Length: 223
Image (cartoon, rainbow, N blue to C red; front, side):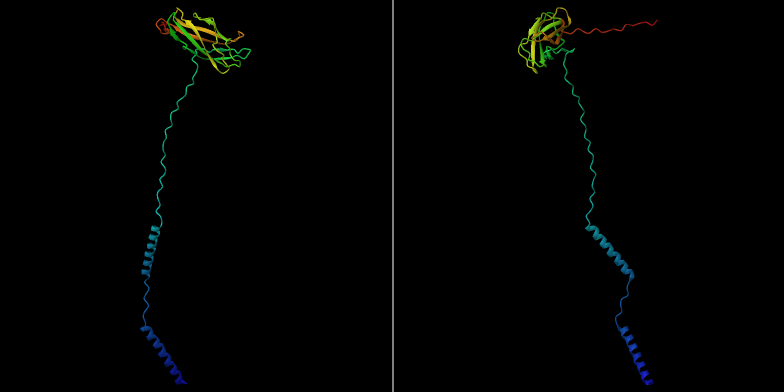
């Protein structure tokens, strides 16, 4: 029994020694270099970051639009056209609905004529009433300077509402110089007056309007 145990121990020792000899004779596993692994990992990360940056599109800088100044055109006021009469004419509608409006006179007011010079004034009057003016309507001298004109002049043609008529009167300038005004009225076929108007001229030998008088200040001495 003792010999058998010894024999088994010898066999076990032989097996252990054989295993150690085989392990010593086999290839050794290479030692792991921790620093080298860290360096490799870092290089790989750098390469991946570079490739990712190259793959992404380059951002383009967007410029803010530059404000453009546009000059505002200057405002030019429009002047209203008004009548050139130096004083308003008068309209008094008749019982039959007659009414009128002065539009113009030729020559214009304040035209200069020499003493005794003949001239013709043409008034343009508009029918702003409801009846038609017939040729029985007429204009008549009313006041001021008649200047050798006829006392009354009939309309030359019928004038429906909304239209106008031109009535001409021949004058002779006065011998006296200065501003002269001749007032006239418009009458219907029933001799009803419903409108008044006038002409103003300047009579001057030199064909120049007389100068307006100016006030000359008088020097005074303090007491």
